[in-house]
Length: 612
Image (cartoon, rainbow, N blue to C red; front, side, top):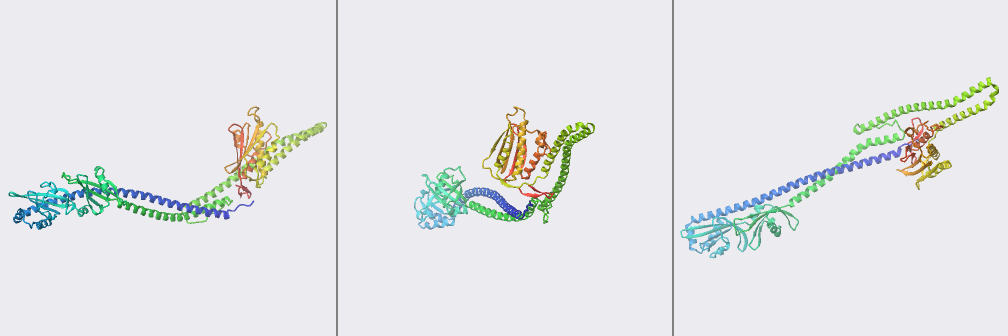
């Protein structure tokens, strides 16, 4: 049979292997890049998020501290403005006289003095509390000024009052100016209005909240704080220890708020400063970072995939060389040479494999030659021994006949017949030994054809069905597939195995393992046809199990030792395996495994075809 050339099959395998390598390496590098980018993104976003949260809390703390400080500065400015106004009045006796006389043109003086000293509220009253002039509301002249409540002397307070019919939060300061028996009460103030809160909050939010005696809730807010829900703020103020707190508005934005009571030195005031930082910036930054890292991951992944394709193509070249080498070696090209390429690590691997292959091939050639010489020496020794055994009685018989013929001719005829029988028996033994040796040496390669394994086993069993005293059982798996094999050779191998098993049951001691019994089983195991021949004989000795398939090893008195060696050769040349073992419950068993399809052939170094 001609050797199989890898040819188109090898080229297809080469292209398929290269495509798989390129695809796998590109996908792996893409996934690796994406995972690394995702890990970096998660770490970066977590760090930025943590940093931003700390920054937000720091900003919030700075806002509340700055707001409280701004209220304090506003207090100082009010006190300073009122003191300056009193000094001014003391330096203007004519103006004081007009106030004491209650002249009607004081309406304009209140507006002038309020603007002059940069106040949002100004009232000058007499000792009875009647308003003499009002800068913020000139119409209040000659009306009582008790609606502001009790304002302490020389101490600023925060109050929420109505100025020109609108509610406003102001810081008030009072000064009682005593001139002789007469007294003027000067009350000045500045409003904590929206511009003031926007100066505190900047791009964030600030709210002033006044809680009245009945729980009324009035606010002054910066423009950025208009979306903050008053209900949530009221709820947070009821839990002053739970700050800073997160508040979500109807639009979906989240705010981090903190608050602090201001004007706590005024028992008539319950005024709170609330500051808030919009967390939308943090959410937007997180979204932008996520999108950036997503694009970065995809970009890096694609670049890595392209790099993987490039690397795989470079790597695939020596891999293709290796695949070609495997195909060539499998087809019998022991002297296959690799194509020379650029020198790199993969090429060194290819060259090392080539060197190793040639070295192993040389060693295999030498080992085969040595084994062949040793085998022929053993064959020659065994043949010489087997030939020598029958030659000795033949020589003795001939010598006896010659001696009788010369010394006692009358006895020659009677001894001649007996001597010839002896010579013929020994010659037959020589002929049988030579025939078996020739059969072992001339065994042809298997001629594979699809065969029904069950039918083949039935034919072998029928030959031994009439053996007296031995029961042969079969266990064949139903619907066995057809197996490509040489029916004559496999049948000969199974005959040898089954015959040895029957002989082994007869060698058992009486009553040692019950009545002689042999079982033959066939099934599909791991994609191969498996045949098991088991007996209930004495089992294999250690030496027999080790040397069972060696040529000329036998435990039979008249065996040649070639039967199981011939069986081994048949099974191996079918691409199968055969081994012997002792059964777990005693006895021996021989297991034969054959491929379902015929194996490829290759040419040996002797120029012969062989399988495997």
